Length: 293
Image 1 (cartoon, rainbow, N blue to C red):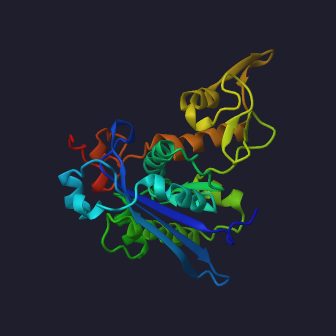
Image 2: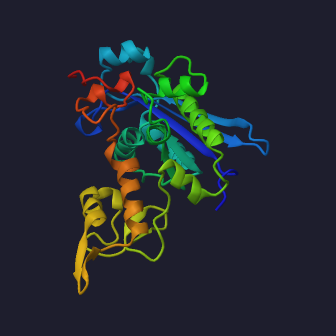
C-alpha cells in the first residue's frame, strides 16, 4: 500500500498529570492533519483543537508549564462531547505522536469514560522511536530538541496544537531526509511503526480495524487489553523433534514487539540507566509528579 497520499494525523494532549488511571485527565487535545503534495511540500488542511473541562483542578506545576488555569476551562466541553470527532480523525490515516503510549493511554481512558471505542488508525508511529533509531548520537529526544535538530519551528511549546504540528512536521522531515519509499510497509519498517497484524497468523482485526486475538485464552478480545500475553507470545517457544523453536513466526513476533513499544509501554529513556520519570523522554510538562488534588 502507498502511504504518501494518506493523511498524517499528528496529535498531542495536555493533561493534569502522568497517570490516567489515578484520576488525571486531558485538558487540551489537538489533531493536525498534514498532507504531502506531489512535489513533497507539506500542507495543513485541517487543525482540530479543543480545550477540555477535566472536572478536576489543574495542578500549579501544569499551569506554570502550559499557561492553562482552571478558569480557562470553565464552560469548555467535556471530553465526551468531542470524543466522536476525535475518534473520526484518528481513524482517518497514519497517527503520529511524540511518545505515543502516553497520549494513547489518556485517550483510551477518556474514550472509555465517554463510552466511545478507541479509534484504530491505519498505522501508528512514535516520533520518539524514530528519533532514537535514526539520531543515535543525539543527547535528547524531547520534541523541542528534535525539532531544533531538524529545523522545524516550535513556538509556545507545551500547547497541544503547536506540539502536534511540530511532531508531524518533524516526522515528515525525517522521512524526507531518509528518502523513504512510498510504500506503507517500508515506512513502518523504517519508523518501527505498527500497522495491521500479519495475515494468516494468530492475530487479526475486528470490524472496526482493532487488532484482536484469533485464538488462545483471549480469543476475540482487543490485543491492547492483554499486553502481558503479547509479551509472552513474543518469546514463546515449542519443543520439536529437532529442538526448540519459536511458537510464532518472525513476522508476528516483529509486529508484537512494535505494538508493545508504540502502543503500550512508553519505555523510551534518555539513557539505559534512566529510571525516574524526569529521566525519560517526556517533555517537562508531563515529566513531573502529579500534584495531589
